[in-house]
Image (cartoon, rainbow, N blue to C red; front, side):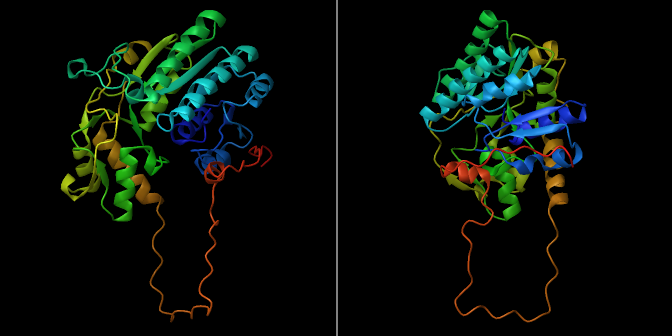
Length: 349
């Protein structure tokens, strides 16, 4: 679930590279088929896409046909209106778990947003160990914790195994600018404009490279059963330090805004349980990860065309026609209340 999103598409790449057959379920509300373009081209016949909302009954029909061994759930919202957050997180997860039980799926791996899951904890508790929960500051916190409780309930009542990974602030290629502070700063750098920073800039986060996060998720398909496991580095990095690192200028150059309601001031995750139960540890430090990200983006950006020596063409007398819907993607259609059609990636080349 969520396989066309930022983290999910990288998981798809890893599973296909290891020789697995993968079925992606995504409603494209935040994901994009472009994230699966390379996988589609390189693994014809091993990847299928299903445009289904995790809350819909069609999910049970699909899992009943596919009978997957493991389901990876990366479609939990970490922000938004409370009704939507709770409906998607709880309704969607319960629907998935019911479908998995009926289909005979043996395990579900779920990605939790660690900041939302833990909330604000006392400084003395950093880096946070599993089981240390702060005071809920948002509906997302309530939803993410309830999902963990649902997983434990289904394990007890239906013998459906699970591992829930509390993911730190994951960053990397394919992340939307609205999806995280690293992506937002990188987008500002590429556009040549100041970044936006809310609050003091002293807030800290535990940044995890997407390849490291994917490695933990794949390991969790066979390890860490019945546990919530942190995926983090244990290192706090401030927003101000990240701004300097990505944009090369101090925080004073940013466009400043007020702190957001419920924002967590200090955050880092203890990776000890992951070392023990997943045999996992982060291998990408932030300096290396940011450097690799910027290099990959630079390599994928087409060069600007040479300046033309031709005189400019005259403008049409009526002005240039602007197509207001050109380039509209499935996420935009979804937001406008238009359901994109069911799609399946071709398997015959």
